[in-house]
Amino acid sequence: MSLVAQKLRAATAEQVEPRLDGPVVRIRARFGKTWAASGTGFFIADWLSSIVTARHVVALADGAAPAEVSVRVLAGGRWVELEAVAVAYPSGGVAADDVAIVRVNARCTSALRMATLDAFVAGQIWGYPLGSEAPRAPLVVPAKARPSEGKVLLDRQGRIGMSGGPVVAVVGEGPPTAVVGIYLGPAPNGGARAQALAAPSVLASMEAAMGCA
Image 1 (cartoon, rainbow, N blue to C red):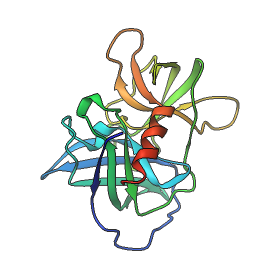
Image 2 (image 1 turned 180 degrees about the horizontal axis):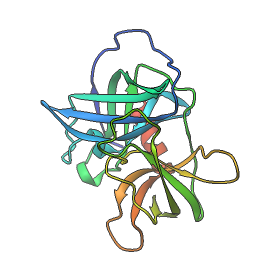
Image 3 (image 1 turned 45 degrees about the vertical axis):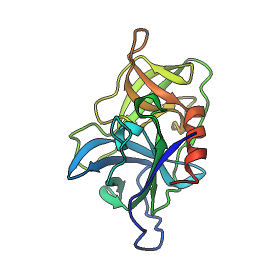
Image 4 (image 1 turned 90 degrees about the vertical axis):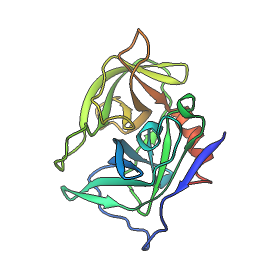
């Protein structure tokens, strides 16, 4: 797998482990002087200093890398800015898998776990819609999910700004923690309202990116 890897800055301090309210973050990307992209991301278990998001949140359509990435997360009911030090994603422009990894100078011990979806389930899309600047928990959009050739198809759309957020399976009585995909946005054809990149494709890209980001 060919990757684009961009170092954003050198870490300015020792790695921190803030008391986060949850694993979901807000992401913005700057290209030149313009903050041109905004979306959602989340910490994932086994890579506690890495945030998963959609590639189109941190890269232009032609694959150009950002000059800067802003990552904000709730901690103690207020926004905390995390230091983003690197970003990596598959090369190939819009033809590449829509996934990216942002490395931060922090650790999250409440990270989510990826899980393969092999049947129709009730699910939820988590994310921060565009314009929701107040410090609050991510929006939750219920959606039925089913697997389809490397994607997860959904019967409801999230709102603009929720791209890159986790799609979680709701199973049993406990809180949902199993991520079955990364929310991408509206589905390109009929049969579903929206789509997510399925967990196996996400994990394959993460394995490749960890040596670069």
